[in-house]
Length: 353
Image (cartoon, rainbow, N blue to C red; front, side):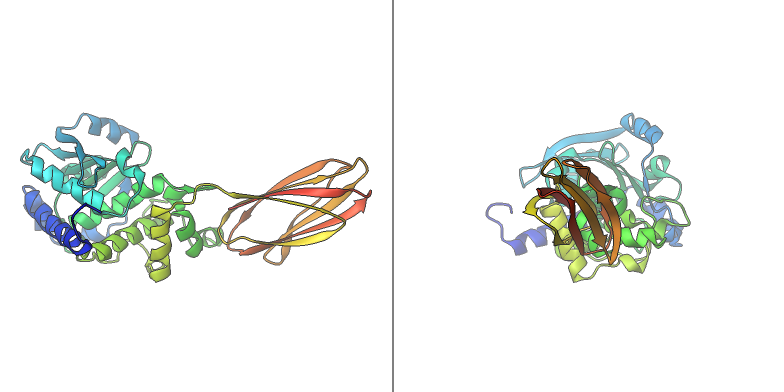
């Protein structure tokens, strides 16, 4: 929070900034507004990924701006098209808008390009409203509202959602395709991908609406619009199955502010046969290693998820085994150890998401 400002004052300032942003970068807006048929708003390629050729051209684009310091003390890099008046106050207002979004340290890795729509589409594609490059943190978006369904701020927030995901860990999957760890677990992204309902990372016309990476970005956009008191853009570019409820938004915020970073490791030791019940509240990789203690000792290992055994192995005498399985919608697992030879014990090393 900015020293000396109340939460209400900050929200009022953000709302005012959004209004000024809409007014201060309208030099090219009339051309886009003249289209007026809403086709861009519902185009399947409304938001796309910036390809390597476009990234190279963007590096050479006619822009002004650079690294600015937000009122939060954070550094935010913003470039604006040369077709916009070179007014540092305009760049600073965009910097403050980015800083007002729920974010983490990834904001310092952002390179935002604010351009007229016609320039955006030369880099992102003919029907796209914006695009993002996860490899370099490059965000390209229009400086003015281009349709009645989405504000410039809403479009920018959507793209920043991709930037957030690019800097979050959802192993063994890419968060930019699947969404962040807790959000994706709650939305059953893994299970619904396995059943063919979702298509992570698929930007094609056929499957764009069921791409959870885009669903996450839209949920992030909606969360920030509501939080900042902005007019909420319509929900139309991705399937309504991604439309967030209160739980989804709470988990999304947690993923942004307190991201999941690594699996949890547990060591279990015992002797004789035993069965363990393991909680698996998040989707991801479960890694199991069982070591038999004693030269003649053997253990049969069964790992059960969702009522069916997915791993059945037996250690060699005095040796160990290791196995990996994905937790995909199952909220618990069972490990059954049965000693089949010898008198020694065991050591289980377990890694859960």
